[in-house]
Length: 203
Ligand SMILES: [Fe+2]
Image (cartoon, rainbow, N blue to C red; front, side, top):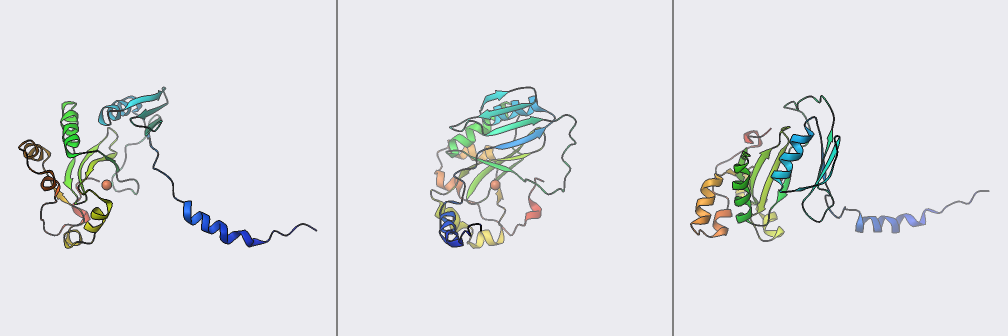
């Protein structure tokens, strides 16, 4: 007669799972594309990244302690992305300071890469970009020093009436920054009226 395994480990496994079930990090994003060279070059510039591996069909980019953060798979003759289809909306990358975000904005502009939606969400100041395939990226800084402060913003009247954000002009922000205006002031979301998701100017 076969041994019967008693289900007495279930509860202890459940406790362990509860304690360690989340990943330790978000590792990478992979795009399928029919423009591998163009995408690789665009992301190399946009993220100030280095190729970690490159072939005619696959390429990896790295820019920090991870072996690759963004990768591309070349698939010939893919259709362009249609609007109005469920899927990924954007991928967000955080920079260390307003100064860096603004300098990166200027650097990308020199490469002909302009943001498609500059906005102060409240918790973040964000510059959205679109890659050559139309995938959307958010380059952001945290507007608050702590996660707790940022989280509290979600429960303010400002967020209840406008959970989207207030559009900004990065050039004006840069002028005010260079004029020495206090950073906390520059990162504070300006007052606004009600705003809904239908006003998000990116698809
Ligand atoms: Fe975002």
